[in-house]
Image (cartoon, helix red, strand yellow):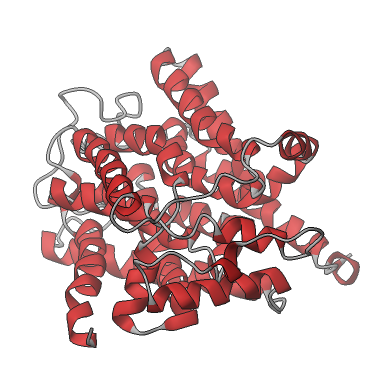
Length: 412
């Protein structure tokens, strides 16, 4: 395959992101969040109609500016804030630690898969041996075969072992740009949006984008979030299926994605559900003619469940103080009488986070719950002290980072 054949894939992926940032139609045309002056509506009534030709952002620009100018400003603001957040995250986590031996083993398997994306891995990558320190790598490699999105991209672009690192870095910028645009659209305040995005910079969620060079979770995050935002339903369906073919954990967050689409007024429910169906059909096809099946070693093992439950406090590092946002949103919705939304968010978080305790990779599995933070912004945007809440969360996260790196000894 030549590089020219991969251009349509790359153009479609990033084109859909730019379309979602700047085009109102990418998010649907009905019940689009209302306005900040109507916080109890949450875009769920017929009165919540979007202004014509408005992008993802609220009317934070001067009234004299035209819709195309606002759309360009939307993209510019979102990309700049996303780049700032990624840079801050890189500085917070530097210097990067060298990969573990078992991660190197997984990277060798991924490199082989980028050369043979539709061929099962040889036994030397998957066969476990007694008392072998590489058992974790072999167990993960058993599950790589049907995860074909990144191997196919690596095959088309000839990126080899760097495939995951390249796509995770690009996805990190895309995800934080979309987070910035959606936060500004929901809250209607540039300061609050910036505080929300920057509060995630020192978290394990942002750090994992840049640290992960063998799994590809960041690429799955970008594909899943873009699937919620794009307008064409066939594209939303395809993007979600591709995200699931990076890692099946995306399907556990399907209730969160559906709730996010519901609050955004995006009629993407059927498209997202069909994406899950498409993934299931693809798994059957890969298992039958291509013999690409997944292993189940280490799933729901008793010692893993006990270990994860004992590490329950460790889940704090995934989003740090930003975990308070879903709690505040649920509490606010209950006090405002919107119990259905509160129960829907609680159930969706349980569906997404529950399976994480059944597998070994607890923390990286919990990063898939990031869409719950976006949903939570709809529950706190009527709070007069939104800036104070988000500012406190942002400050708490950076203070924790200072203590973590020992900077507090110099500051205090």
